[in-house]
Image (cartoon, rainbow, N blue to C red):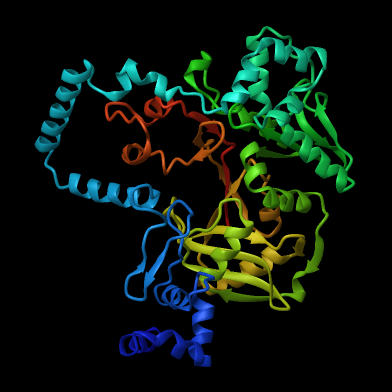
Length: 477
């Protein structure tokens, strides 16, 4: 089919879109295989042929050029992030051709120039630009209010507003207000520091009719659970990226198992503890709500016998995961779904095992339809998938910050082990993955990169903080 379409494009460069669109067979194939939704049919055709979407690595939409050129960059080349990344890749490719002696010579020349001009070998050592790195990104009018002791005293002490209420008025995080209150010497009132996210999630549970207890100290014998839902043996922790991450300037030891310890304690009491970051709540709220609906048994239940198992295209699966999975889409080998009345109720993507050579395949993504739980659905779909893969063992990784893995075990998976906690980096408002923060990649985007420092030293020097998760359960089928 692709060869036929390519031939039409070659023979009719000005009319090929119209010709393909008017052919029922060709247009149906294009619609099924395209990974984009576009007003330009030429773009839809190009996506179907090349199995590409129109998003850059930053998630921005790229400009379509032509059927032969495909997509360009997502913005003006001077400021376009993916153009900068493309240029960086080319630079790295050029650097890879240098011999060790050439690299050493270049580094020595650069260091000598820095020492002659600034008196130090690296940018990170320049005291004259430290103020640029530490520049306050807060709105000046907001910063002025928070720095004004009399104004903040009137709001917090005299009017007895909570940190959340003041933060909501100013458009900042409650923790920012709390920090300024501490700097002014105000005593922080007990339980005035419920986060806005905690309040919003509590309001959401109330709207669902779910009885819950904010700030419970009894279940874990003196350790607080942000939200405790006794009727469902479910607890929720709302983790602000800034306050739940580490930076050496705090002058305390880094606890890599901070979140895992509370999760383990809950597991010992058969409590399902869900960790939700403030970033997830603000940026993926609909997915978090879907997760909570499922755990609270608020979903419509459908029997697996009412569904049929089918193989779907990876493009279809990726579109589904982008919309409903916390981690979004990922490249896959094959994808499958449970379908009822043409509607997807459960979607799974399979790939080659990435981390364990003992297994041929890995379950990469799994995601159900919002508001629907298929009883016995995972077991039915996995049986079908394993038959399609010639009974090969399949490994998967279950995020312990979101699940105890009970659904996998009930479907026939076997628990093998757990992994140590992993981490990502944050500046308090955004997330940087371990992949993006590998030292080999830092020079492409980190404002002040020092090749003489490690990954963590560079990230800490640029005021990033390290957030540790709860690790994963490793299961096989």
